[in-house]
Amino acid sequence: MPANNPNPSATSSASAHESSAVGNDMERELTLVRIFDAPREVVFKAWTDPRQLAKWWGPKVFTNPVCEVDLRPGGAWRIVMRAPDGTEYPCSGVYREIVEPERLVFTNNATDRDGNPLIEGFTTVIFEDLAGKTKLTLHTRAIGLVPYAPKMLAGMEAGWTQSLDKLAASLPAFAQPETTSDREIVATRVFDAPRELVFQMWTDPQHVSHWWGPKGFSITIHEMDVRPGGVWRFIMHGPDGRDYPNEIVYIEIASPERLVYKHVSPPFQSTATFVERGRKTELTVRMLFESAALRDEIAQEFGAVEGLNQELDRLRQYVADKVH
Image (cartoon, rainbow, N blue to C red):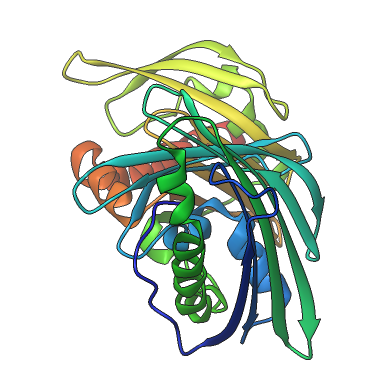
């Protein structure tokens, strides 16, 4: 990590030991120990959830516009740290061992913006339960690969220390139950029909083509593979003559109770739940966006709130026509 002045946090205690075991300035080894006032499940998640990881990784005043995590042995992670002056510092690695919530082992390599390796690292993080608190032990070793690597390695302790300070400051918010209301668009309708029928109307392309989309829209379905991992490709035709290509990937199919699918562009995830209410069916659709800003942008640019409500009104009328 780039060097920066440490900023100790009052929410954790720390001790650090650093040794240059090989005896040259192209290698550095470091152990840091922290006690965090949070359960280790919370601390472990902060290391493995990309949304949380992006909030604390890196030195003070750095941000992380890119944070990607494939949490499995052999899976890759990638972070692009951005300094206040706009300079970016890419880093990445591969998970070697994952024992939730006890242990993480991964490589961590620094590269330049063209992907050329600058430093190779190997890190082990141990999470110990201390009666509701967490003792974290981080051991990392790095090897420089370019002539100017010693300057980067000299800032390794400061970079990791500040990063853990930011983690300590972030943990109280991470421990709170996550709320998604500011990132969602939600609509509910009650249908005078069995939920098996309503579910079928949502998953059979011969039915979907009659009601999908806001008022005045029509749809051409090119592919609709309703299974986990299956793809649905279609074009929505607006009343003004504009076409809107769409691609959806199904994540979960639990007939006739639940559908979860991911809209590729713009990116959001939808969940449709079908609940029996006597002989009727209550359908709730939740569109979950990555951020409140994206939710607001889509709502404003595409009229997504009104569009979803019009779409469900069309479905309700279509179901009523089929039942009666």
